[in-house]
Length: 111
Length: 114
Image (cartoon, rainbow over all chains, first blue to last red; front, side):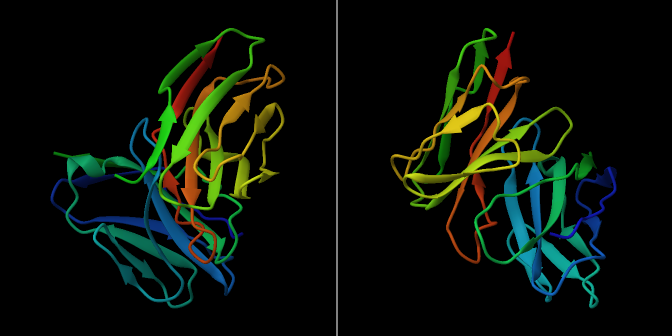
């Protein structure tokens, strides 16, 4: 699976859009980009995933560049409850062999 | 409500004792997983199971054991052979197939061994 690079921390003002970048320059054609988040001392929560096209759900939007070497997770109207560590991971589409998280980005929403 | 339950939330044990962590799910998922998380670190996979009565070792299985006698349950035993058992343990489940990486996590058990 391709490695990812994320900034260790970011700040965002409450009510503004939070844009979290992720680089995955070695991604291969059949690998998906997944995003999870983990609020302090809780289990991780799945947010969204995509292959090529941009994706949107009730939690966030995922923008994947045309060359697929990077992506951005967008939380459109950040709230204090969005303060968490956000993990970007790249995985092949099939299989049930578990996830490996790196250190992610610690997003802090400021009031 | 469908979900994953882990109990207890906090667990304290003396060194040299085996301890079993509980994980139950009512999501009708075939696959279940155990992860370990150390302070400031990401997740590391201990064991996973895609079907009842079958399971595979993950990246850090040494010192741990599991069983999968029922679809809903996947208990993890931390044995005395695990050198550094103090950690946050997370259980997860998923369907098997293209969305296998869309995993649902329990609230975790924080184990402290002294």
